[in-house]
Length: 327
Image (cartoon, rainbow, N blue to C red; front, side, top):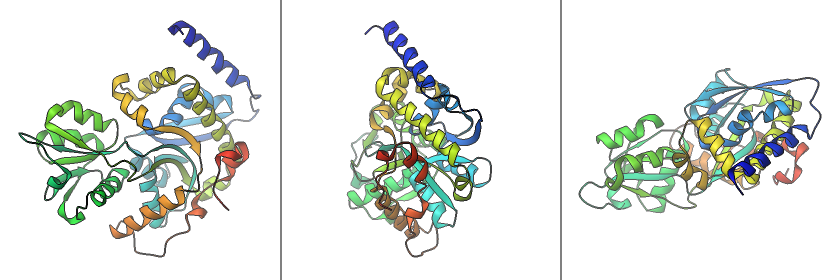
């Protein structure tokens, strides 16, 4: 298929998608604190292609650097919803925040990595003992680092963790302020390109099945049922766009994130962009909670019932096959 033919098919698909349902007479409004990250790709694509408007939603996107920052904006009252990895959401729930997860919007099991300097000689995971590791504390990056250490039988206290925002990780590694970093895409690729053969990348496939979720305050979500149903419809349209026109969707997302196509490619390959609420996420949430309490990110307490923090009704109403949670 030529580029022009593919573009024509995409335009036709988009028009049909927008006409599939009658435009609602009343527009619902939502504000979403949204990381400039590939993990939030479905939300970015829906905003870029007018899919929210086609379902009677006026969505204000509040750009954030990463999911933990987006969640902070939500909890401070600056947004109705936020997209973030499951780790910071669990930490806030343990601290008493009344949060509900409306849907998972992306998942990955082999996207995060530990990148270590290997000047003059090779390194192995065991060589990280006693080293300084840059990581954004309280995020999926830190949880992955813990899972990585468990996989390689490294004692957590054998590393010195240096708390850095995602934007400073590559520079700190390059300048020698840290010996290694734990990073997600596209930060991971940026480090690999910046240091070339001077850095070794270590992954731990399936050590952590990361979910990126869309969350809101439970009291707000309870009164926004219609807005949430429309939101789910728009995100399902964005998922269909990714499936039907992956090259076009990737180009659109790269532009939205101000990334070159090559910079986005590793994340695009590693992530599964999809809308669901799966039973197995409850196991992951409990695993993260145990780790978070051990790390003293929240008081030690009985394990919360995370089922009560899943807001299932909106997705159940529009696509019940996407919800496998037992209630």
